[in-house]
Length: 224
Image (cartoon, rainbow, N blue to C red):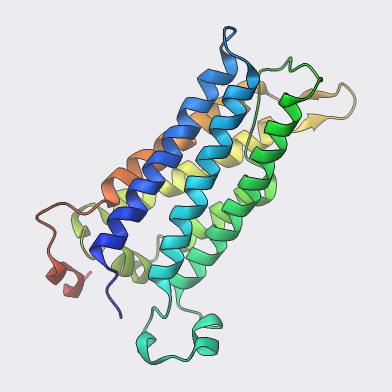
């Protein structure tokens, strides 16, 4: 199995860290009475851009993963069932949904309509489901071996944090469901809290994936 570049992995980790930090900051900014809602909306959108960029790097690192991955043709790589590749492209699509919803939220709050519920953005249902599926696949030993060969001692923590973060994003999506009868959110605390806690989990997980100076490439060859 091809070993991902440590430099590219570091870039991916830092991009995820910055994106997650934007989502962490976006919630308290949304609840601040001294700032315009557009500040929070812009922060979420910037975070989504960093998420998608980081996910694109991860997608590239997973290209032709799996046994004999380097010898695959382009078509064979695309249709490959290698779990690292599958998890990466599912997550990448999920980030595209988040770009769309954060951009829509930014456009919405920049208009004339007043924002009263202080929930500027929340993960949409489709993006949240895709993140959950991707995180579930990423718990597999084959995926962790490919992604975290340089961080074997913290691989399970990274994958678990991403899974918990995806669950919190899912809770946020449920809480932000608009009840037709009242046109109000099902639970604003779930919406804001799920986004905040999920982003914190992603932030810590991303920080753990950044290679340390003592990272050894030989770790990728060890038995899991």
